[in-house]
Image (cartoon, rainbow, N blue to C red):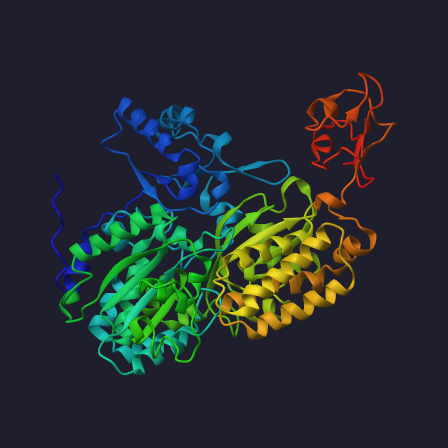
Length: 622
C-alpha cells in the first residue's frame, strides 16, 4: 500500500516536497479525462492502451496520466504523447496497438490521428504548432490537460500552493489586496466587478466570523468553463480561496457547485481531502497560525442561484431567492456575516497574481479589462471546446483562427455571448474586441464566458424566443418585472414566430425589455431582455419579415415555412414520399411529386432527404 506523504508543517516542507517531485514527461501519455472525452470513450481507450503496454512490457516504464480538459472537446478522445508533444485526436480502441507499436517502439507518428489544418488538410502533429493552442494565453487553464487532478504532487510540481506559501511568509492581508488591485482583476462570473474592492470591503467589515464562497453554479446553456477547471485543476481554486480567506480574515469557505457536475464534485472533494491531509487546509497552515477549511455545497439546478444572494440563501437551507441590496454581501452575506463571493475562474487567477505579481497579470488585456478570459466555444464552429485568450482579443480571431471557422463552409451570422442574459453580436461586428466595454456598447455582456456561434441557417427571432423562454422558466418569481415581464415577452415572440405578430409588437418588446432591465430585483431579471433588445437592434429585418411578409427567412419558424417541389428538378426517386411522416406527398416512381399543403406539417424531412434539390423551402432550393 502506498504510504500517505507526511503533512507539510512549514513552507520549507512544501519547498522540499516540490523539489522531490519528478516533472519529467517523456515517459508519460497524457489522456484527456474531462467530461467530454470520457463521454466519447476515453476510458475504453485507456484500458486498451494499458493492455498494449503490458503486452509489449512497457507498463513499468510508460504511464498514462488522466488529465482534465485539454481544450478541443470536438476532437475527443485525445492523447498527448509526452516524449515528443505529439497530439492525437479521435483516438479509438482499435488504435491502441498501433500507437504502442509504431509511436512508442518505433518513433513513428501516426498521421491519420494528428491535427489537420488548411484546405489540403496538412498534418500538424506537435501540439505547440497547432493554431488552436498556439493562439491562446493560459493563466486559468495553465494546468488543465497537464496535471492529474487527483494528484496533489502534480499540482505542487506545477507551483501549486507556492503563492499561499509566499503570502504566509512574507505578505500582509492588505498587501495581498493591493496586489489584486494592481492586477486589475475583475470578477469573471459575469458582472465584471473589481475583485479588490469586494475583498477590501469584506476585510474592513467588523466581525470575527467571515466567509469566502466560490460560485460554481454554472447554469448558462453551452457553458462549461467552471466545470472544466474543477475537473482539471481543482487545487488552483482551493489555493485561490485560501488566499481570499487570508486577505479578508476568514477561516471558512464553501464551494457551491452544481449537483449535475458529478465528476467535478468528485475531483474537487478529493482535492480538498488531499489538501487537508497535507496540512494545506485546516489549522495552523504551514506553521503560520492561519486556519482555513472548505466544504462543498451542491445546488439543485436553479439558474437563479447563480445570483450571489440567492446562492447564499440556498447554502443556508432556504429557498434560493435574491434579496434587495444594500446591505451588500461584503457587509452582511452568508448568515448575515461579511462574505466574499467569486466564481471559479476568478479564484483560479489569484495564485498566478500573488506568485507572479499583479503587474504580470495586468500585462495582458486592455486598459480597463486586464488579464485573460476563458470561453466555452459551442455552436456552428469546426472546433468546439475550451479556450483562453487575453481580454480584448477580437471575436474574429476566436471564431476563425482558434475555432477553425464555421461548419460546412457556411457563413457566420451571429455570436450569442454571455449566456441567456447576454446579447447577439452580428457579422458586421465580427471584429469587436472581447472586453467588457466593447461588448456593452453592442448590447451584449461578457458574462461568465459562454460563446455560442450561430450560422446563416438560424432564425434570430427564434434564438431570442429560446433564451427568453429559458429565463422565464428559471425566474424565481419573487419580483413582478422578471416574473411577468419575461412571460409577456415570450408570448409576443411566440406570436411573431407563428406569423401572428404586428408591427406594434416591436415597440412593446422594446418597452418591456427596457422596463424589466431597469426595475428587476437581481441580475437575472436585469439582463433577461438582452437577447431580445440586441436582436431588435441588429436583426430588425428578420422581425419585419416575420410580421410583414409572414415568412421566416431562415426557414426555422415552422408555421411560416412552406415546402413545394420543383417539377423540373424532380426525378421521381420517391425518397420524399417514403420518408414523409404524414404521407402528404403524392406521386409515382419516375414521375413528378406534389406536396398537399393542407396536410403538410412543415417538418422539413422532404427537404433534408432530397438529393436532387427538387424540394424547395420558401421557394428556394438547397
